[in-house]
Length: 160
Image 1 (tube, rainbow, N blue to C red):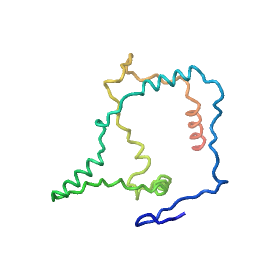
Image 2 (cartoon, rainbow, N blue to C red; image 1 turned 180 degrees about the vertical axis):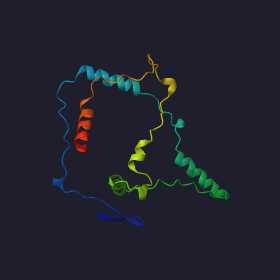
Image 3 (tube, one colour; image 1 turned 135 degrees about the horizontal axis):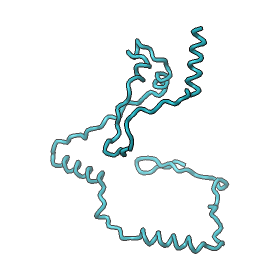
Image 4 (spheres, one colour; image 1 turned 180 degrees about the horizontal axis):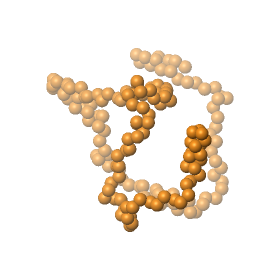
């Protein structure tokens, strides 16, 4: 329903009787759990206090009042700096770049060279626990692991 209101118009949504339903709340005829009532009372007692509106400030209202006073006095008004949002990342383009094979002409280095450089140790040395023992190399196992043995066999068969 639209009706004139002052210099403008007001729009109201009118519902038919069959569109309006009564509220459906739970049945309150059951017994209340005494423990839950005690918990609810404790929470209400803990949260209850006096409200002092003088400790709360509306920064928007304060800034608006300062702006109005500056305009009334004829002072120059400087607009606030607007922080530019970071650029939007095109997710599809980033996904395509991540799935594309690395080519030396585009990236300048091959994928193997990228992986060859170890990452810097970023751990905090003061927090590392000392480990007892010497810094000798670990003794190699007497038998080769199965994966290494299989690789050696494949190399030997391809050379023959």
